[in-house]
Length: 532
Image 1: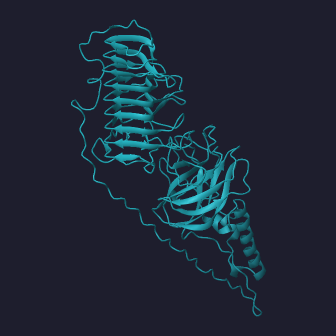
Image 2: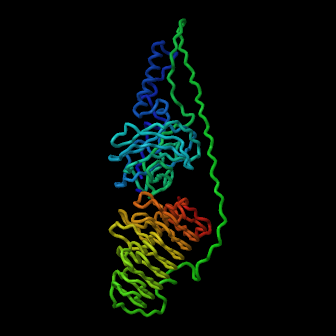
Image 3: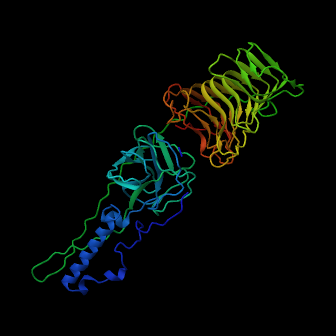
C-alpha cells in the first residue's frame, strides 16, 4: 500500500451563510410587513435553502449543519501507483460531539473502476451502515447516503471505508493534515486498508497514508433553519407558524467489548552467556590467522571445507552438498541456488556484502551460526529450508539510487530463526529506499509457511514495522500462510517507543492454521501483542 494543505471549508462549515447574502437582507419580522410580504420572505428563505443544499447533493437540513474531515478541495501529493488488487480503504476517526452520520464520500481518480460500495464500522469492526455509489463521475469527490442514518457518540471511534474492486485508490503518504471539522478528529495513521475481494473491516496502515475517504456528520443540537408555514384563516388573516416536532434520535445499544483472557506466559529462557549476539560474540574468533582463499568461487566438490580464509569472490556460489565454511571472512556473499542440490554451513565467520546491493547469505539449504553479517540490501534470505542461529545482522548499505527496500532477514518456508540480533538500520533515501523491516516475509514467490522465530532480539528503528508475520495480502501467494511460530522474542522499543515507525509487527494472522504467538516481550518486559 501506498500531508495536505489545510483548506477551511466555508460551504460545509457550521457557521456559513446559506442564503448567499447578508443577514440584513432578511431581517424583516413577520409583523412588520403586510401578509403578502411575509409570504414572499418565507418563500425566499425556503428557495434559498433548497438551492444551496442542491449544490452539494444533500438535504436542506443536512447542508445547513453537516461537516466533513477532509473538506472539498482536490487532494495533493497523490502517489502514482499501479496497485490493482481488490482492497478496502478508509479513514479511522473519533467523534468530538454527539451527532448523526448520514453519508460518506471518497476521492476517485481516473481509471478507478467500480462498482464502489461504502461502509461505516464501529471501532471493533461491527458494520453500522452501508452505502452504494451510483452516478459515479470520472474523477473527483463521490458522494452517497448511508442506507440508514447512524448516531455517533462523543468520544467513540469509527472507521468509514469503501471497497475498490480494481484498486487504483487515491493515497497520500506521510499525511500530516488535521481534521477540518470541529466535531470529528483524526490522528496519525488514520488511513487504514485491508486487501480482499469483499468489504472487510480495514485495520492495516502503511507509511501514514491517507486514502481520502470521508464521512458526512451532523452534530446533535445544531440549528437547522425551518421556513415558516403559512396557514390562511377566514377572518382575520393570521399567519400561524406550525411547530416543528422534536426529532427523537434513538441511542444505539453499545456493543460490549470482547474480553480476551491473558494467558500465563511461559518462563523466559535467558539469552546465552554474553547476552544477545553482537559484534563481540559473533564473527571470526579473536586470534584467528586468516590467509587468502585461492580455490574456485563456484564450489562443485562435495564436502569442501573452507577454514580461516579471506574470500574475495564477490559471490561464493555453492553447487555441492556438505560444504563447510568456518572462521572465515567473506567479502561479498554466499549463495546456494534453489534449482540445484547444494547445501552448506557457515560458522564463526563474517560476511560483508559491502556498500552495494546484494544478499549476504542465501537462499536454500544452509545453516549459519554465530555469523556477523553487514552490507548489501538484505543480510540473509532464507527462501527455503535454512537455519540462522546466534548471529548478528545489521548495517545494510545506503542506497544512493533511492531504489532498494532493505531488510535484515527475509523468511520463506522451513526457516528456523533462533537466538539472533536482527536489525535493519539503512538510512532512508528518496524516493523509495530505506528499511522495510528487520524480519520480512511476503508471498511474492511462494507461500510463507513452517517457520520458527524464537528467542531473537529485534532492534528498534528497523523500518515501518520491525517484523512481518507472513500474511501480507495482495501477493501472488498470500493464501496458504500457516505454521508461523513467534516465541520468546524481544522487541526494542527504540526512539519511536514501538520498535518500528508504526509498530513491532504486522501481517501476523493468529487464526491461520498452526500459527503460534507466545511469550513475546518488549525490552522492558511487557507483552507484545500479535497484529492480525
